[in-house]
Image (cartoon, rainbow, N blue to C red; front, side, top):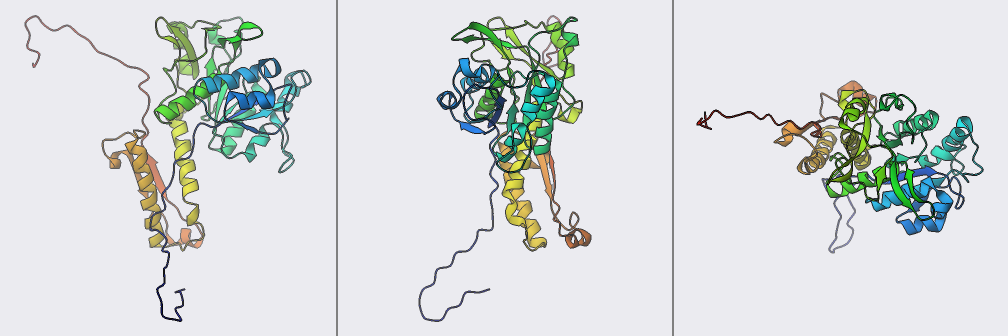
Amino acid sequence: MAPEYLSPGVYVEEIPGASKPIEAVGTSTVGFLGESKRGPVNKPVLCTNWSTFTKNFGDFSDAGVLAHAVYGFFNNGGARCFVLNVGDPDTVAVGKAGKAAAYLGEDKGPGTRTGLHAFEEVEEINIVVAPGQTEPAIQDAVLTHCEKMRYRFAILDAPETIESGGVDKLPKPRDSKYGAYYFPWIEVYDPLKGNIFVPPSGHMAGIYARTDGERGVHKAPANEIVRGALGLKYKITKGEQDLLNPKGINCIREFTGRGIRVWGARTISSDPEWRYVNVRRLFNMVEQSIEGGTQWVVFEPNDEGLWKKVNRNITAFLLRVWRDGALFGATPEQAFYVKCDSETNPPEVIDAGQLVCEIGLCPVKPAEFVIFRIGQMPTGGDVSE
């Protein structure tokens, strides 16, 4: 409806912009789930540094594995995390059934959710970690939570000790494109106990955050130094990693002169399309960004004008993603496509109150196997031949 002008004068009107930019969401806020003798129970607490954590949950003597995981997170480049204490480690029920119950929690509605369910109320979380929890029931629950929430990724720990049979008998979590699995545990310094072994998931979450900040979520979080690691529970050989890597078990290895590094970037999915951690997390970022950046479309008139606006805004966003090096292709046309027109929105779709936009992406994948083919040149031969 046009404004009404009743008397002479100068009138200023605000005109909404034709473009509504889509902003990339954050990718490295972690949700830590663990046990501590101090602090609130079943209440996610935002921690932006190590001091915030100790103020709420105490130090290594109070929170043990959880404290080392959070310390490793900040030490390796992490900036924001939500910590949820499931209870005092001395009183949390012992045994697989009881402890799974504590971590899974219950959903009794807003404000009363416990365990993993409490993280459902915190939208900012992108990565979920339950450091040191290697029980299949807990790992399955963390994966299920990430699958349900759609835009979250789980970092899981292998058991501290290998049972008889060697690395080929190492247990693996169930198949999922929303999680990665790391082995072995790392050696760190504890102020009270000296050198101890701790699960790597907290340090890995920090490496994810560091890589995201320095290079982008499209860069695989591998071939990176593990800060604070003094040693490893097991020194993995190349032959042993040849057994583990195809199974989606990411190894942490020590290299002479290069330190302790993450030497794997695979998910635990058997689907080749979702084999790599960075591909899954890139799609998480793109999908969540588009979902949040197109909320204005809801209830707008579903016509050709709207389709063009949606197409233009998503194309502009993906063009930035391509320029950041996250998509494969020499030109934007080779890297992605966006289709929102009468073909994707025929009359029956419009009558159902739907708007359909089809998007295709070509993500970059890590150079996991670098091969140089070297041969001898004939004596006196011409290089140009």
